[in-house]
Amino acid sequence: MSDTPFLTDIETIRRRAREHIENGAVTEGYRADRETVLKLLNEALATEIVCTLRYKFHYFMATGIHAKTAKAEFAEHAQEEQEHADRIAERITQLDGRPDFSPEGLLTRSHSQYAEGANLVDMIREDLVAERIAIDTYREIVQYIGDADPTTRRMMEDILATEEEHADDMSELLDNLGGCGEPETV
Image (cartoon, rainbow, N blue to C red):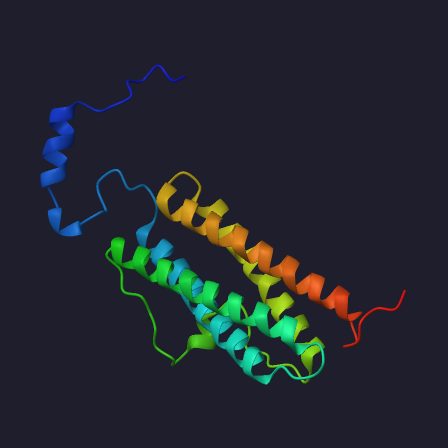
């Protein structure tokens, strides 16, 4: 426990709350470099949009005897990636920023790539690679933010956990297909 008091003087808090009211949720107590956080969040937003689009493409293009299971995962992941994008965009606006939904430069802002894959196994591999990229970059974002912006950090930790689940799902699909599009033989 710290020797410092838990709260600043309540009168000081009340006075500060009235100052710079145009900044909304961004108060004097916000300790992160807001411009850097907004840049990182817009990159994460682009990543989630690219992942949504790739999963949607894979959903519609998956064919073959083993496509049904993969299509279900692709559809679920596309929906969850879109939810991540929405959460990130909302946080950007809470930080008095502007979410960048522009398709121009989307791939340069995104951490992951848009790779279609030639067949079902390639599609799954590309999704796994993208998830692994998101895992590493989101983990770095969480570490960078640290205690300076706990709300953004918690959101990114939650999204990171889902990305880890997605990677596990894609890895399991690959294992079930034996890496070559056919079930493993025992």
